[in-house]
Amino acid sequence: MTYTTILWDLDGTIVDSGPGVFASFKHTIAAMNLAPLTDAELRPLVGPPLRDSFTEILGMTPDQVEEAIAIYRDFYHADGVLNAAPYPGVIDVIRNVREAGKTNSLATSKALAGATIVGEHFGFLELMDFLGTADFAANRSQKTEVVEYALAGLAKQGADLSRVLLVGDRIHDINGARNTGIDVALVKWGFGSPDEWALADHVVDSAEDLARLVL
Figure 1 (cartoon, rainbow, N blue to C red):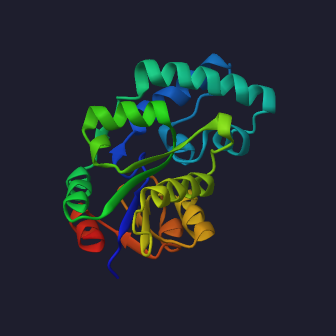
Figure 2 (tube, helix red, strand yellow; figure 1 turned 30 degrees about the horizontal axis):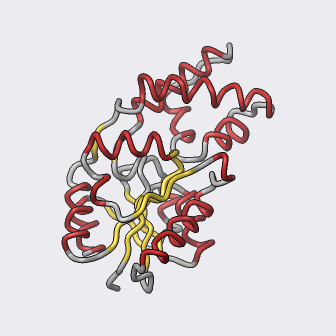
């Protein structure tokens, strides 16, 4: 199938944000006097909206969640956001999608401020036709809500949405795609697992595989 529009998850798909995200979670957990977690224990926290991670995985109360989010964001934007690295070849694929006349959009649970900093620093923001990001104030944090927001924004631009693919790495990307009726590909270099990969329409091992799928 030839896809006309590609929606891109960010963390675990375009960039390896693990070092900065792990450091931010460790700082938050320490600041709240909670038991420390190993990197392996932190892996499930990468990808879901922050509120989900703090509530469902770490079992925090609503008041603790709000405190944790504030601590996390302050540290992440000051020290963690650029403690990341692009996955080899992925930004080249995004650029080639644009040059092929197709549409690119972010579809990330990261908020606009963080996504903009990362995108500008690593040089892929200019390759996006729309920035589908989370916005807690607008009650847009779940991946389904982010994908709906991206699709609506692209529709206003007149993008060809006849064949849309979401490229991500976690179960939340699967859910976002299924709930909006689009296809989904999971990349193996992110933070997902074989159980998650089994639910995707496509699974890709490398940037070369990804290019064959989207171009």
